[in-house]
Structure formats: structure tokens, C-alpha cells
Length: 119
Length: 108
Image (tube, rainbow over all chains, first blue to last red; front, side, top):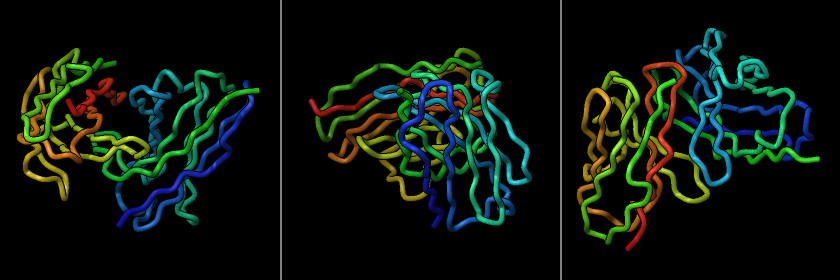
């Protein structure tokens, strides 16, 4: 069974960097042949794909966030991470990590972590 | 980017009813890259259907998907109490992947 768990601060100040980590168990992020994505959901709204990292380390980002975004992976600890710089209140959302992206569906999801941007 | 529009926004039905949810893309997408997800309050989305009509593991056969081009449908043949939730469609054939805004299926 593939399990994903997001972790990171629940509160970030405006203009600072939002950093989240997704720890994966039950699959290897560096050898399983999958994409690994971040998706967010603004309160009471729909879903927005943020970006993915492929098991080989290549990335693809949503153009709307690309200038502020970095997704990376740590194969030795089997986790991947998101850094979103210069955050504003508009970045307040529930952030999910998921397996999939690109041409693959999102078949396993973490439980999500709420990040609030506020001073 | 491909805009995905779902209708209706809310569907009020009773257990045992048939639910028909619509998903429309702003441009034609391959049927291989249209998925449906179910989300219940306080939970992450769960994959229901991939490739327009392929049920994910463990999804009961009362859920079915169809469509092509720009128009896709999710049908729940007979609603069970656990089916009342929000449903999202997603296209992932043209980057960036995009989701519809969701259809809430609520108890009438």
C-alpha cells in the first residue's frame, strides 16, 4: 500500500517561503517510474495542480506558479518537497501531495496539510 | 490552459436515484486523459475513474464514465448513502493538468 504524508509549517508570513515535504512509504520515488505531484485546494474551492517531479528528477510546474516554485526530491529519505517563495494570502490552501502527474492519474494522495499565509 | 467546466454545480438526489454529472473541456482531449475523483468532507480526493471509463481498484460498478472529445459524463446508477460527496473531473493530457470546479451530490 502506498502512503503519502505531508509535513511542514501550518503558518507562513507573507513574502516568506512556504516549505512542505511529502514522505512516501510503500513505493520508491526514485525507481518506481512514477511522477510525484503537489496539488492545492483553496478553502471551499476546487483543485489546482502545482507541479510534479518525475522519478528521474525532472520537473514540470504550473505556469501560474513557476516563477516562485521549486520541487525537489530526496531519494535517500524517500521524500519530495515543495518550496513556494514570496507567498501571499492567495497561497492559503490545503496542500496535498500525490503519486501521479503528467500523463498519469493521481492515484494515491496524502491527507493534506493546511497552510495559512498571515502575519 | 484547458478550462474544464462541470455541471451542475449541485445535484440534489435521493438514495437509489441515478446521478449524471457532466464535464466539458474547452478543447478536445484524448479520452485516455480524463479522470474523475470523489472527495468527501475532510478527506483527500480519491481516484474513481481513469481514461474516461476505467474504474480504479475497488470502485463499485455503479460508477461509470463515458464521453469523448470535449464532453464527458460520470454516471452513478443508483446512489448509495456513501456516494454523497463532491466529484471532480480532471484532464491530464494537455499541460498543465486542470480540474473542473466540482459537482456536489447532496441528499435531497
